Length: 206
Image 1 (tube, helix red, strand yellow):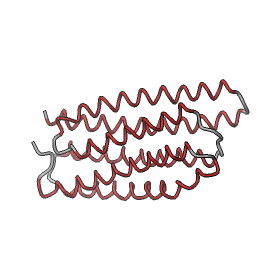
Image 2 (cartoon, rainbow, N blue to C red):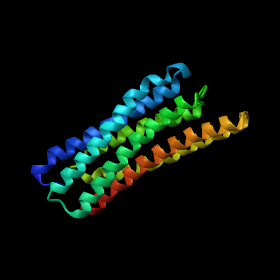
Image 3 (cartoon, one colour):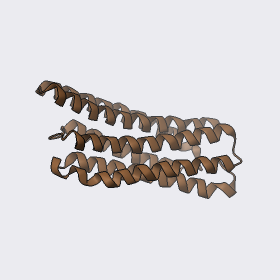
Image 4 (spheres, helix red, strand yellow):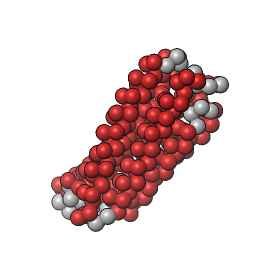
């Protein structure tokens, strides 16, 4: 069963795929930023800001395209929420890098670097899911894997917070580290939400 009428299929899928590609690009920039020396981290901020601006534009175009389509209101709402979740995740990744730079954090813990890699993997899977939107029956596996990645990423972030407190230091430094950790948790949660919305499309199609 096709999710969209043929006359709307290619433009809408193309926009969703473009949005998903911004996710992967931003996730790669975040991983690179966290792994760099503090003096080099600001280099990725312009590209991340451009991705966030582009994601907002694409989300608006997807909303307009859905308003013109002949699909059911349920499908249109879920697809728009999927696009919004991806766009918000791009924003959240920009925030991770911005906080890391503005707080002038020192060495990033191994646990946080691994959490960034989990974020990358979740974004890669989201791209694959957007490619597969015409055949929504397979989206259940995407949702299950996103939930697993979110749990794994959350454990890594919590471990980084525990390490932060165990090393001690000024209260302000601890709070800054927690803010960056929370931004990572927010990004993981948004991708998990995208997985749930994709699964709603699969359920609707059965």
